[in-house]
Length: 206
Image (cartoon, rainbow, N blue to C red; front, side, top):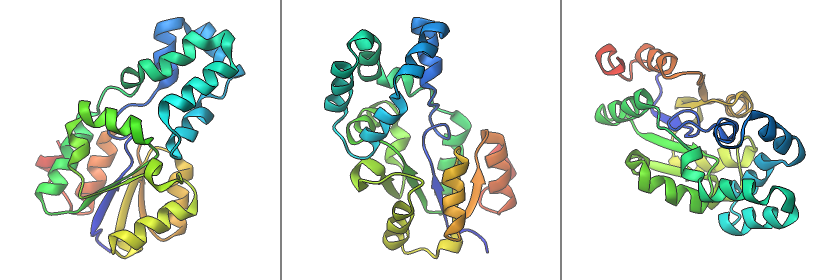
């Protein structure tokens, strides 16, 4: 079945998301490894993605781990530098799909306040036909209910949805519901998939 709508993840698909890389550049790899071994910063971030207030959540962790206070505050104060840069070819493909009349949705684990920050820096985040932001939905991928909410809202047959994400567990959850999927490991492979499905032309994919 030819896809009738395309669903994009955002982190590492449209915008690079590599917190470890950021911390390596600021505090050095050795100290970063020690911090991440001691503190589950990705777990902290998931609380934000589930709808927790960004500032309140991060500063609760600052209070819980005073020995790493300065480093944890960077997650808050320099967040937009961590969520960077955009992936230009992926953005071009998003715009090509919309130019061709293909509905394009976002399904992303993202906090409410952090998404507001990102919108100010990345204008393409306002260009989706529909946006499913985990912070507003109070659930995250790969939980089954987030996919069910998308299906109920968008009105597209699940088998006609094409979803790309960089996380295999998120892809597997979508596949279990009958979605078509593409494991994103770079924009060129995604471009080739969209061409193969007849959604963009080779020229648009270049």
